[in-house]
Amino acid sequence: MTTSSKQHILVIGAGVTGLLIAQGLQQAGIPFTVFEAEAGADVARSREWQMILHWALPLAMKLLPEHLAVQLKERASVDSSLDFDVYPNNILRFYNGVDGAILAELPIKNRCIRVARKKLRALCADGVEIKYGHILKAVRVDEDRGEVTAKFSNGHEATGTLLIGCDGAKSFVRQYLLGSAKASITPLDVSFWNVIVSYPNAERALHIRSAHPIFAMVARPGIFGFLGTYDVPDPEKPETWRFHLAISFPRDENVNPHTLSNAERHAVMKEKGARLCEPFRTAILGIPEEVAIPTDDIGYWAAERWDTRGGLITLAGDAAHPMTPHRGQGCNNATQDAYNLVDSIKRIDAGGDQHRLIQECSDEIIKRGAAETKLSLETAYAFLDWDKLQASPLFKHSLSARH
Image 1: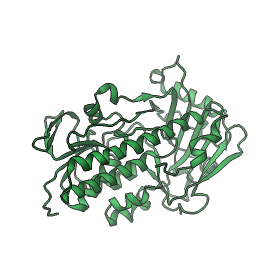
Image 2: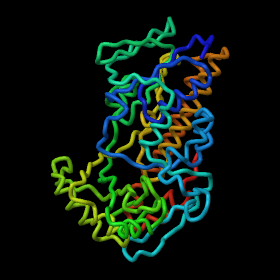
Image 3: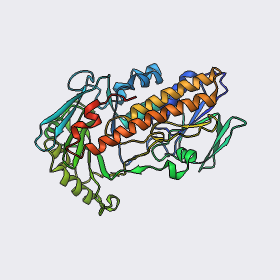
């Protein structure tokens, strides 16, 4: 695309956030380069998960070019055969893990699509050139020249007019802006294990999915879990379906989950799962022994204002507001970040003051992200406390944005 723009945006990280920014910039004709630490698009991750796009879905559709936006459901959703706008697909179902009673059916007020992270990332990468194998190791700022330079471990350097850190919860860019101590993640004293699994027995798969066609949650004192559909290659063949299971419980100070063997992790997860109602019990007890169970050190960052170095550096997505997944807000806030940043960059292209626009945009990201991080943290603990469960932010607000 021919452009007269004098900007060149350096996007650090080819996750969903960075790629949505890239798609928005590409539509606006603003030059950019996306750098990704992973060696290639097909690198296998130790864990995958599903996400929900709800209040930010219209923003994602605007950032994507029309030919990709119309393919979002078909290419990225967990089950493209479903209508996500009709009952029960448009509610969150929450079960009492003791007796199996439905505690709540929480309405999703906006249009929504449940997506598999890997499939959404692939869709957002369509048509975007990504420089893989670029691990950021240093940043240099020249405010007088209005330039920022990224240095990578492979020896490559790139200079641009704005660097956006979309490099995840353990962001190098956040550490550069704030220092390691202020930028560090606060771990939760809660274990959170999740896994993708399929069941070769069709009847078992049907039983497991009876909790909800897309996503259901469960809690009993000291245990929280969820069960979601991750991929449905053929709606008529349940044995091909893949599910996303997660279980959370208070951390045992005497056990380091990272030192447990996979067999020991299976034993812990199945001991917890055996105490849940159906079909969560069957889903967890039926995880094949050969399935690797990763352990997640979930945490959060209590966001504080960062100096954008004259409007030359900022953060977005998990780099800006890593939060727990309990209210389904991470992907939506990341999408809002991407939309707002692209809008600010277009305003700069039209002659706006870069320092003011990027700092104002960053301050909004900080305020919104900090508020949601707090709510998600409260929800994470409430889900394990029976007395607080139904007063939790999720039960009060469902998935509504709180900004």
